[in-house]
Length: 470
Image (cartoon, rainbow, N blue to C red; front, top):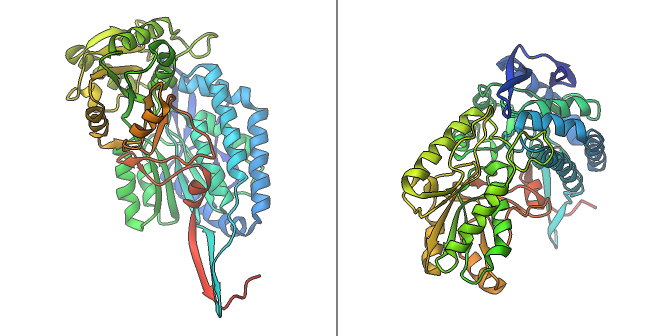
């Protein structure tokens, strides 16, 4: 692995100390990563603050061009970035490559948006104009499950809107982000983009920092609550994309062989480490056994291995802490349900869990009530549609859900009754940069993607006067 540096004020600098980054497929140290100090966080914020006035005054067409140039660089270096991503995150190389290219795609689309002035009223001697102004310095806190893709959700709209940025990747997956920063450091004026890495010790001072105007955070609900409380001290704007316990509902009219592959992918993509993955599957009693059998067959045929090996479908869990948490969910599964596939950690180095299907389990168990964030799926039997909607909604989470049926109209009626930010019909995890994304209840605050997400990085300003604007 090559040397890595922080990006502060346009310069690549070492951290005041270093920290090891672990390959989750081998449990071996990949490299020592620079670790920023509190003083270096302050320096990054100061650099972003100093760069803000000129960047905010830069025409949006030029900001758009530079974001597009970064997308070009991402695509040119996609193989290198994907290799680093697989090594630190664990996902199969094909998935890592897709993530890198997806990041570039988000850069291109989000940079294509605009922030036009809107005339709300023009009558007599009154003209009311609505403008979207930049906020200032934005702090972006990135999780470990999709380090580059989620950076692609946040960086383009933040910079397009005229803000400057301080990025903090997760401590277990900082390398691909630091490599990205190195590649693009000369594209933007110094200080517009700053990237630091920490050992989970700079999140609190970052969210409390008086010169950061907004925090965009993706991560667990528990951490999101801390971010919200900390940001409240300076009334920062916040966007929180948090945890989910997404319900999939399978109606009695499905063909099990047809829907099972989509359900499996919706639950097990990225080894289940997806905030929007299916975390609990409700299946009508008339097709329950068949659905279970189909999912077991897929689970047993799925290749689980080091993500760098060709043919790997699922890699390891990303870090030891999450690995231990998922093993606790396995203990609960054996206690409260019937494990029909997987059910154990794999006997090998690395944080590998066999794809696990659990049937004959119900609410009240840890696996059903909480977010497992791993390759373990509880399959829950139901008989009445009103009852299953009530059970699906009986959660503090409300990120996503899906309904599976051969009758789209029937599925749509049920979808409208689900308390979630996104509900899919006969699919799951279908996301795109032009489709707004956000959670209900304790799954988040605010929106990402599309015009709605771009607006979150701005301050609405109303000018009410006699109509002097052109």
